[in-house]
Image 1 (tube, helix red, strand yellow):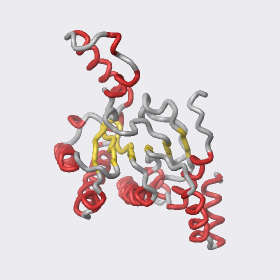
Image 2 (cartoon, rainbow, N blue to C red):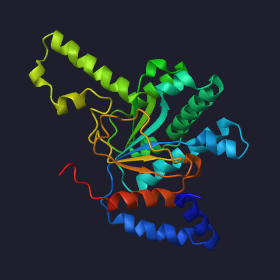
Image 3 (cartoon, one colour):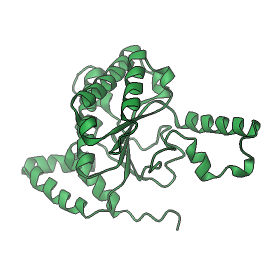
Length: 266
């Protein structure tokens, strides 16, 4: 049994979850808190399989956790969340039934977030990372509507990475810069790290590089996620499936981040 699941079982058996959460909360408040958290929400299918449920149930529960994760981050004034919701490879390799479940859950959660008044009340900005042209029309329209209606909001930014590929993002930026050089708009000497970053999907964000990348389910890889932006990100991999994540897990990960010594190559 892995340590994350073992600790959760002990806390449950002892009946001290609320006490443990309170203790973690006091520790975490001392900071420094990450400004930008990116999340690879992994393990939805395996969670469903272990409970003899259809895969779509895993994605439905996972979408509920994403909603809670937003609220937790709002409580701690996290400025930016990036959810890896659907990769470009997923669109090519997952079954039509599974893709339908994933897309439907993204659409429904965005709609619920909008109708709840949370976006308006907390001035949340929604931004899409990825190639929206590959998405079904309904989801594409909903994302575009939210991007347009929230573009001037100055609260939390929620990035939804859909039809996303880190390699494609870098390749697309290179092509865009090559065209500008060819057309005489810039010279090769103008190209530096700051300029290149501005051509990426996250280029207009106040904190384009995530301080912390979280991946659930025990897998330890980035899976084509924010490849350029993650050079100095702290990474935390936990063995718990995404639908099983609770606030104490969130707080433990933040506490782990806060204890890291971020040297940035120094």
